Length: 327
Length: 293
Figure 1: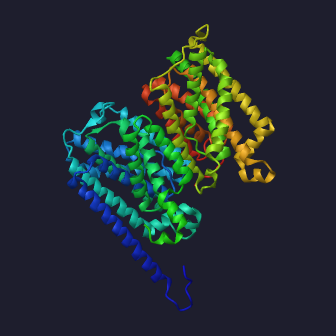
Figure 2 (figure 1 turned 180 degrees about the vertical axis):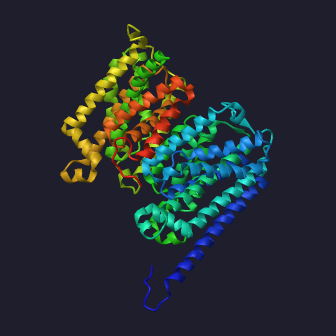
Figure 3 (figure 1 turned 90 degrees about the horizontal axis):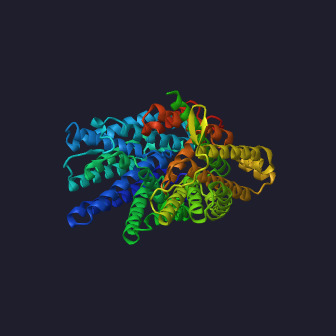
């Protein structure tokens, strides 16, 4: 970066110019994404594949808020997903809500669960991770042991024949755009900067006047809201909710792997990571169904050994001056 | 009811002993290397499958399989360390990266076991004579008592090693302060390899014991043990071997006693709640000393 001479152009306008480029790049990427996904049902591409692609993009982006921006690693992330799925299923199946009215309540359930888990935010690193895992386990076991009239016991719940593939596809797209928009906003807003400051050095941030606990809570709630919505929409799409799939630890694992594969702390990272990994996963499934699991494990190990910062992260490490232009 | 509680206590000690061993190996591994070994459960189940193969193909009794498992898994751990871990320590977030990599390893190992042994549950048809012993008013399977005995011996041996010998003290020193240990002149790479190999060897041995204690196992049981291992380690305090032993016993007792009073499926909830409660009250676990955020 050229150093500013005395009386030369002030820093603020440099920053504004960079921000303009930043948001333009984001707008271009965003429009491409929207265009592509809008056309999927129209052109007749594989709806299920793209639905789940959008789901994983959303999950990875929301997880990025918890991990990349805030610095937490919730091993029990699937708890929010599961609670969203079950809330939607209960409202639709037992109380006859229309699905679109039930989804906001799913998001709300995610927020409530996030508030319930908020006291754990003062833990660090692995302690937080394992406690989060234990809490998700408690959620799963409590729900599967609740009376059958409420949560369907081990059979789970059905949403009747309310599945509407194309409509749920577009709703998922709307949620994905909301999540991406939120992360984009977060990356340049005061809250986002405060969050990253707290992640890097909580005491220093505290001294600068940042309300550490409140900032962490807001970041956490944002990260809790979107997986709950995802769980609800996926329940609508597949019509069935049960504790084994709704609270499956593989969901958390995939979310983490996809987010890290792309690059934590960037906005486009989770998108790139999710696309790459979902594509690889699908490819493995088609070509090598028998050794599918083995290849997935090996692919993860290779990823960590050779691309530890993820795809976007590694790119930014080699070209640090692009950091202010690439979302 | 009293008999049930007594059975619960005995089972709790047996199961708790196994959980304690898993926790012990995991805490040494985490303490020295700061690696979140999510694949630990798969190493444990690998030990069970090794015992299964040795028994069914070569007729080797599980007790004889213990030293074989120990040596095999020690060697495997040593190799695995040099293959996987040195690159990791140079990344800027070794804890998260290690979690991810070991998660990949755990998926790969489970897949290998799935390919080799298929998804059926396996068990070892070995019985001691007499099949069960009478303790007070209850009958307990001899296999479980033997496993408890072996667990005790191993725990004592390990504690003696960690607190008595120079190598053991080096391990504990690495847990306390890695950099200082290097300054004093210890080769941290060799020591880390040793810690990893030791932890893996212990995992293999624990797997053989699991084959004796639990009725059956399959390639996917590993994930459960990984999770239990981590809960025990966090409950006991990261990097504290004694903490892991105590926490394992507490968790095992809690789980088994819970089955007396609650439906079977709810038993893990009690253990989870103990973990969450303890951590919120004492964020470093029972005997840990790392700071909170």
